[in-house]
Length: 268
Ligand code: HEM
Image (tube, rainbow, N blue to C red):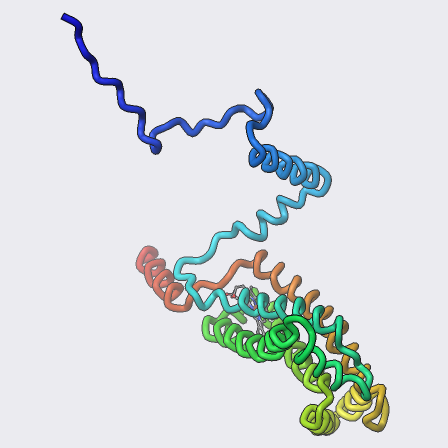
């Protein structure tokens, strides 16, 4: 009598072998693999000549202290806000005209006529407030977690410079629409700067580009706003992040208190 055997069920997907075919044995099988291998070749080519991947791994794959929480994302959030300001600012600069007679009209054109102009300008305008709020929250986090202490004092000082430069961005950007409000508010701001000790009068002369508010004041504010200060912020941000990667981040104070107690107990 013939014996019937049930066919063996195939192995579940989770148990199937995931071993990769050795690269180049039969060449890539499909367009996706071909593209992936092409990408890997390009990265390998660059890495062989620059050793960039070592630096990237050093920067990105760091150990973080126990107790790291959402408050530690405020620095990266500030950086994202800055990048968003840089990108939207580039698009605004394509239409903006820093001349006293055409500045207001060019902003009006961006908002009313340019494709997505109102959206991009809105992002830039509100983004500046978002960046100021985020930088203050980030500073408060580092202050309350004691991250300004040894060996991170230099990073705190760089942070203070970044804070001042961020305020400088807001101040110089405010004049650019060149409407009544921005004009008079900037005169008040420049005069307040002038009352500062020692450097005050020189600073307000530098900002006005002379003793009086004139046609060159707007170009000066524009140059400071779109080149000088963003360049300084980008450079200092690089130094700030280098020090964060080199020194690591501070553990929250409550975690450190726990560890110290157990160490003392161990010693006893
Ligand atoms: C453009 C502005 C800034 C950017 C993009 C930025 C970015 C960052 C990032 C990504 C970190 C690491 C993780 C974190 O704690 O968020 C960090 C850490 C730090 N930042 Fe900033 N930051 C800025 C401004 C400031 C300011 C204004 C201060 C203080 C005055 C400051 C002081 C510090 C300190 C002391 C650390 C070390 C934190 C630790 O060890 O736990 N930063 N920053």
